[in-house]
Amino acid sequence: MKLLFCGDVVGRSGRDAILRGIPALRADYALNAVVVNVDNAAGGFGVTAEICKQFAAAGVDVMTGGDHIWDQNDAGQTLENEPRLLRPHNFPSNLPGTGCRLYTLKNGKRLLVLHLLGQVFHKEYLDSPFACAQAALEGYTLGKNVDAIVVDMHAEATSEKNAMGLYLDGKVSMVVGSHTHVATADAKILAGGTAYQTDAGMCGDHHQTIIGFEPDAPMQQFLNKRRKIRMEPGKGAGTISALFVETDDATGKAVRVERVER
Image (cartoon, rainbow, N blue to C red):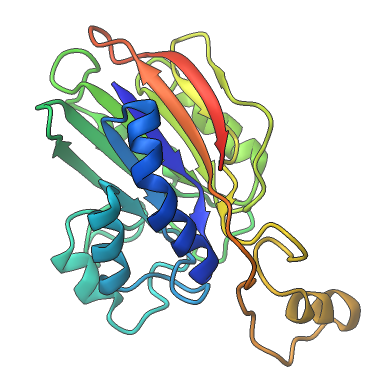
């Protein structure tokens, strides 16, 4: 299978990059599935049902969130009504939506996507993403009852993402980090056959911004330890930062990994 994971979409610049770029990327890489992190897609804070529909129409198969998944007022309803949108699976199970879902693709292949939120430096104080991953993946075996497994580890600390990659090595096709908006240069295939990158980066305005946002608000906080103005996404042209992974049809393990920027 040929899979593409796109890093956090930030504001309109990121949305436009996805809507413009995904159809071409699907054709160029002969993609079977596209997973996109949409945690900052709606003005920098969460995602809306309308954005989900637009992305699906452009060729996005699955969307993941993160710590901003609840920022929009109708987030719960969107999660209930949009099966292509996932929240972090280690949020309490009584909340709307899920973070682990099996999808049947157009070619009949079975893709499992698991979405987790890290604990280190995050204020949500969720259940352990490691215990959650173990429980969620129970009953799934690559190459047998599932053709590929993608894990989005939305976390602040690189060490926590690194640990998740090693923890799941050989059990999933791909562990890719999101959240920090800066692409790391460590895309590789681990010893057990799992593709890994600490952070896929972001889809948005990479020029003259601070992780995709206009610099005034974050700079004010760095300089004065307080913020008086709202964070606003950058308004320049957006770039897609993504990870391409090709898996072996028989085993579901990675045979090729490539960073993508377009």
